[in-house]
Image (tube, rainbow, N blue to C red):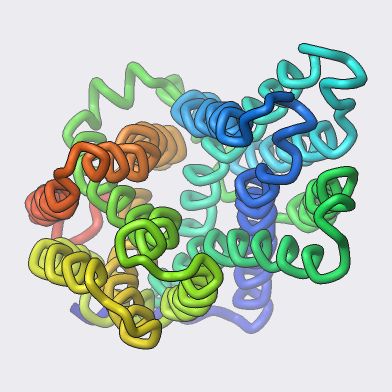
Length: 431
């Protein structure tokens, strides 16, 4: 299915491209700030959770990280309602401000030695704010970018949501690696871990100024609609669409986290690779994955979003087990890199257009709410638990069961993708 490209004036094209840049810049900052916590935890854990056992310290910091993850559905609901009832722009401004405050709070927090138990309590509070912010960011940004993207090229432009999402992760780990080159272990534990959070807060302020100049995509009439941002209206009139989005997002989130955040641990724990080697492999693979998104977005513009989603489900079902089994016994870093890149290429059929496909399922008055909540719920349940389920099955001597779990969820994603209309129900005639 080839989509006809709409005609725009040079000024209109420039405005829409700037809007994509402004929206996606905040997305990059949000994910940078969210993942900096994970990469710096090893250095600040002793400052907030004093213990003789480093594992206990990391478990406590991981618990705080998980709490932020579980706040996403609430963030998806709150910010989805704000975006539908008070405008996408306002929702994006509030979410980036909240992330900025959360990062600045962590950067300035006194340690356990200074204020006792209030230190971990405030750390948890900051992470809850960040979890709310990220939970609201996805739905609102996906909706906004889908609405301002150039018709006929929506797949290409909407793909930049995941370009910046992955880019945020890469920038976070890159900054930590740079600090490791210039600061000693003791300096990183003493104050160095605070630097990335300061950088994140400053970047959020820059993004705030970019977003302030964005054009709102909703009309006053739409925002005043009695169903705008209504969860009751969402489930009353669009329950089938919500369930469809939930269905393929569950598999999409699971396989995304399997081949990104969990894969580094998998290469070390299961394949027996050195931690540094695994880090190099994953950094290179994630960089290529980031670069793939616009290409797969363009492909979706040519073959149709529904076909792209069907290819995602089918290829994920067929190749997940073979790829993970091959990686299990692999010794060559180059071959491991190739296999992971192939897996991420399959995932790209989904991630490049995931926000757009979800946005096309809902009318504008409940679009941000529908996208944000469906994504956040599926992501928290299936994406957030991916690593825990994988490690638990491995500990129980049933590691291969995890591969089949991912495969089954990919088959589910394929079946739910069959429910997608050949012609988008909404967005194609909006704006």
